[in-house]
Length: 287
Length: 321
Image (cartoon, rainbow over all chains, first blue to last red; front, side, top):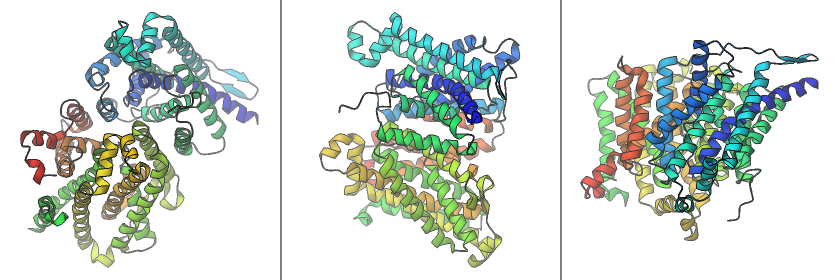
């Protein structure tokens, strides 16, 4: 019994990281109505960014999150001006395909540089032992970092001028323009933040598990599940839903093989989409 | 009548060319090139039914091909069925599954559906990798016995080639027939404005489920034939995500919504890919180039090659569909 409990706690810790990844997806989706299919490859870039930084300077990996955030913001701006700006407001098909094209390019370049063999970040924090179970320091530190970053984003969106502008554009782009907000600037900032969140969560994952350039795909699927669970444009809801998903994984992993997990997650995804199209925390549809 | 369409005869001519060219001089390497092109055309044409006609992106189209391959190989190897029959049964089974599944997930609109298709691919792959009768992640091998009813391996490969070319021609004919039917008009209406289509009496959920299952049938048959020819199957080959993605590139490159566009894009992209894969410098970058190509098409020429041709020669619409 206590084994399940330990597995659940572990699930919750990892779930906070899933939540952080999903926040990035949810922010972009909510603000500009673009489903960002570069998400998985950006998570993978975050992993490799952390790997390279850690290989270059052997300091505490969690300090290296700061440069990773900066890296994510820059990449986000590049991708925005390369592929997203031109398709915002056009049909969903176009934005799906253009972000997807960038995804292919990033994965292609990544595969050429790093092949698809696994890498890991060799950094261990001392863990906490309770009874027969040890929670590794990395899991705890990753979860704490995820929650801190999520809170910082929440503060940014609700307490700063730029953050309020982002929410205004998400609500009604035309009205926001009339109030003198430059929606192009706001969209590019929001997109960059979304990518930075994806990179950061990838960097956090890289301190927990081994990864390849293709690992992002798994977390992209989880992010979709979490975003759908939380409902669109609710970044903090995404964190909570991420923890829920982690908890679910923690509950089921002692009983079934890990390779079945995509099937379960996908089942959950479809059930939630069909039963709660507005998300579990969302308001009921009015139309 | 479809027989009066000039394009119908063009399709038959192309198929005849596909059959004649390698037969002339028993050119096996040409046959292997053409078979890949035929598969690309089959995948792109059927994907066109979803993306081009109905406006729904299917990122997991390869699932039909892979599942068809599995069902087909299972029937020919484990049950000793005849090739044509097992390919048809594979198509029917996969198509029926797609219909049931479509009824459930096609209630989702646009982008949500696209996300669900990514999930389907991963879920089916997870399922097959854990499914004992199909050899889990090691897959299945064809026993050499299975070639005997077709007159030995050498003969059997030629027969599968003819069958694949037939499936290719059929894919284009199906696309053409749907395009010129009332059903096709319903799909176009859904693409332009789903709510308006529903108001005008198009039963959108059923239409979408039907087109989803139709777009599953021929790829599944082709999968059954192709994996019979290859003699083995495993989950990573059968459900190759990249091939699924490249199908979308082919379609966008040629021109979505057009029968010849899908076929042309499939053929051109397949040629380009085999060139890139064999070139020592570029082989690592074929995904980058494919991605760049897709981005350029999406941003600058959403109609693809055929859209560009239509703008150049408006009369071409009459002959080239």
